[in-house]
Amino acid sequence: MRIGDLVGELLLIRPTEYIESMVTTASNEPTDAIRADVVVLNADGTAALHEDLLVFPVLLKRDLKRALDNDEPFLGRLSMGEKKPGKSAPYIFVTNPQEEEKELARAYGTANNWW
Image 1 (cartoon, helix red, strand yellow):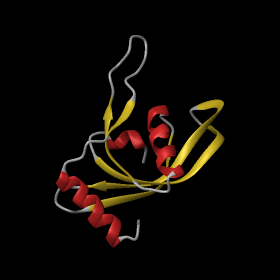
Image 2: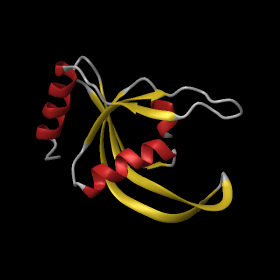
Image 3: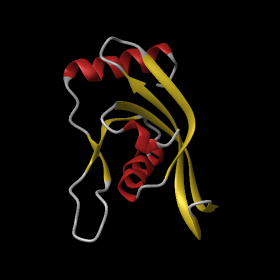
């Protein structure tokens, strides 16, 4: 599972580790990453947990690093930003959840000891 597979989904994310430098199969150059447990929250109250996902996109890492530093889960919908000339559209988090989406996150977090 890659974070990019979750575009459009409401995600509750618990960052667990900041990795300063690692080499991946996609590049011979070292890069940083965030390791996180990611929960896809569905409107019907069901959820799917993906443990130890590595997150590489720059804008996502920035948001998740802040959450890791503050020792708090992160709630947002994964989306695609605006494509710039000569570049791919970036992955971004949309962080204005509806009240019912916040309630889904609270219910999952409470039931699974995330807070």
